[in-house]
Length: 464
Image 1 (cartoon, rainbow, N blue to C red):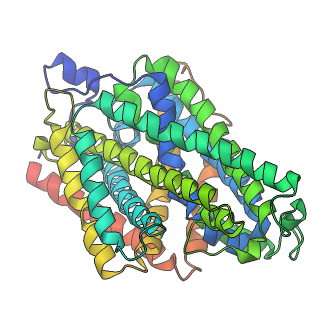
Image 2 (image 1 turned 180 degrees about the vertical axis):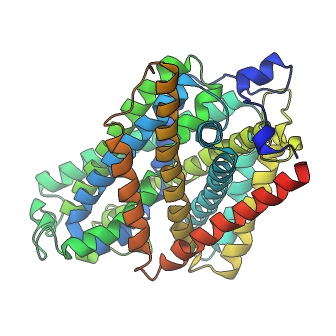
């Protein structure tokens, strides 16, 4: 393996000039926006929101608003870098180029592991959703079935992936809009039952029902919902006209996420008392089922299943591209740069799939605890990724300033926004240490960083 410190400043365009395998620019603006939506609207909203509601009560709405602002600031930081250098590997490339070899190594491998864990969580969730119809079939069987189908789609070409994800995400978006509309009709037409009332937002111990402490704790769970937005950066190397499509995607996607999340949650919390929401099933399906809207509940469960598969589909895509970028940088084995004649990084995709397939075993051994365990691990790696983006952006802007170069798509509130985001993410890590379900993942994070540093050091010595 080539030493990261001596690896060339590789990008997709560099590779092309050297007749090396390259990724195809087959993604249009509509693909990029829906891919980011697909990566973020999934299990975090439809299943993970249950524990957040239990922790914060109606104040979970405020939690989503705050987390959304932080996510938007970080995506603008990433967007500024990506517009200037639309390369494979995205923020791992920027950490490597502007911060140093180990930063790139850490950022890239951590992101890869995060989306492996996300894939495992989404496949686990898909199995849980299928049990709404077939309760006797174990989750590990469904995880295996959907794993095979999604990976087969991604082996074809990037355009098929883009089209598949476009329609996956479009179904989700239309369904959420429909659910909000139907919920509002139930709420104001009198067909929502005796419990349906906007008063539910403050009836049970007030809006801050569990106090500020409950709201703060819920932020750790809420962050799981925003993971996937950084897919905007991963798509850059395969985007047509990234200087136009990336800024549009960054600005529009976060607004839509907040609209869908907060809008659907307002309807959910108004239709049903938050104290009745359970954490082991989808609150959305449960509420419509309890309102005797079984057809709607079943249709919504199908949409939620599609949402979960959509996020896994995005994860398969992003993981293979991240490994490809790491290999181009010299931070992963060279065989991972192999690209098929259709422009798919096939070896990177197959290695990611091989590790993700362990989800079948995890669900077989821990059917009741698999999802909560995987969600906690995802949150820890997500926080590290976003901290790395903030730090890499600080170095990036310093480098641009030294060159006397103005960027096209500036991040907001630089540099104060960077430090605000880092402080917020660090607070979440501290809060995780106080939570039984999250503590282990927070403790393992520094162990993971040390492991990667040792691996980086060993590989660097071998290269000399």
